[in-house]
Each structure stands twice: as C-alpha cells, then as structure tokens.
Image (cartoon, rainbow, N blue to C red; front, side, top):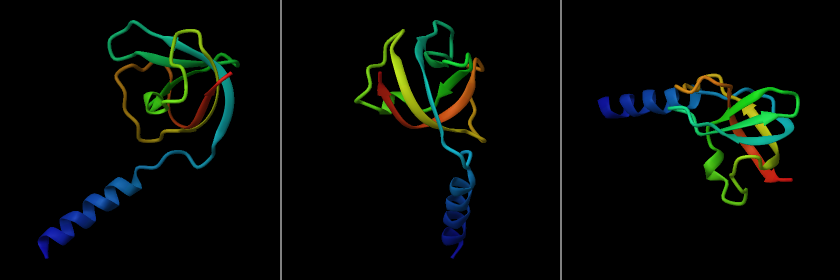
Length: 97
C-alpha cells in the first residue's frame, strides 16, 4: 500500500509541472552560443530570445547557426536552466524556412 501512495505522489508531481496554456506561433533564427550551459537559442523576429528545452528532439529541422525557422511553442512555467539567456520554452513544432 505504501508503494502505491509513493507512486501516486510521483505521478501527481510529474503531471502538475505544466507549461503555459497558450501556444505561440513565431518566426526566428537559430543562434549557437559558446557559453557554458547554453548551446542553441532562438532569436525571434521581434528580438526576444528563447531557450528551447527540446530543440534537438526534432529530427526534421536543420539545427545550425543562422538557420531561419518557424515554430510553435509554449512558455515553461517550471523549467530550470543555467543558461539564463532567454525565456525557457517547450517547442510544439518547428520547421526550416
């Protein structure tokens, strides 16, 4: 019985870590950073910087410095990063322009 309670707590904790409710569509450019803790950022056309938590999971997009992309993302509410150069986001979709 104790194991079921612990598993329930872990599942609830995992499910309670939410991303923002709204998807945002945008265009931007992939930027490579040479700073510890940062590798790939996305600079949006409006000048905002995004730090995607799952960029490399998209195998159909070319990830290289200067690559133009269109993307759909959600803001991460509970994401943690040591980069701190942009807003942490979870990509819903991304494609090369």
